[in-house]
Image (cartoon, rainbow, N blue to C red; front, side, top):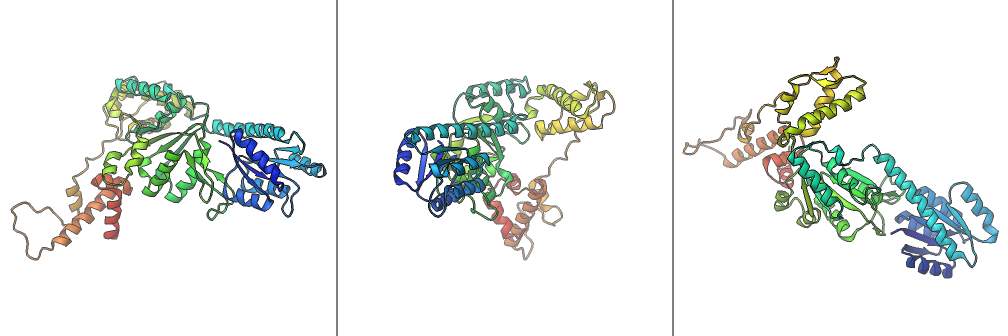
Length: 465
């Protein structure tokens, strides 16, 4: 539903347009002064602004300039009388106003047509932006490479769920291609011609994530110099992909749940709701059911998201697809590098196929890209990465370098043993070992220790780590 702001100091015109445009399916707000219009523009987002030119104090041209400054995506239509006709023409020529209409008995019909013209241009501009952004990224089932039984089952699932409007939750390890699956669902759906908008929920702090998803109005926070549409609104009538949904804080989970329930968003600092028609696809590499039990993920949001679950298999479970993937990445990066590498050396594919690939398809792609960059011949010599050393047990890791060792059952306890300090030393060492194993990523370290992220943060604070 498109939002329209009407500004006219004649109450009868506001009422007439309000009734007519609401019947036409628009969401309408009316104000009777330029000052009130400027305040509205500062606190909400509008697709179209209709303003009379001749008003006391702040006239329509000033409203136009303010709209252009704080909400450049809004189309502005001027209502003109005979004596301010020239001002309207100049405003349109200058590019600030989208259209102008003289007050006449046909005012209502002319405004309806002007709104339709304005929205066509607004929608076209948004679609062009989306198409340019996604032209290189749009994927179909042909881009999901694999002929294994697991991949054929995945493709059939995508075909089945794409035609529905239900929310999808994609599970899979890092590097398995969850976003590729999400794009395929979108491309095979009736929303394919509309935007596909992707965001990694773990890449933004909570406050920034909120403004990215829901947008903000001018003055909502320091640096908010103009209104900005959020990604939910950008994705209207299309699909939004929320990657790494398990990284979202509990506060943000509450706000997302409200959006899914109400099908509307409120920009940060705004006072008005914006209706949205968006299909939501989320993805995670976490066990959300366990996080629900641990109270680190909301149960009601989990059930809202997990309407249609899709599991993406790890590469080690579909080794027969590795030769196809190697061939695909060889062609891709040979072309990019301008090299005529025609094939992979004999025996290399077998070695690649026997590797576990803990980083899945992404790791395989990086391996081929690096090998192509270093290859000087016409055959690719590529080897699987060196096997990682096996991870030690948590107990061994905890005791490393600390002098702490487990006390066997039946052993005589040393005199003066401080149990509280002994347990604290073990906990502290476990935290350090988990952080080292997860390269400092606390959420992953919590998963290593099989505790909630909240508990992990509490222990980190407790031991001043």
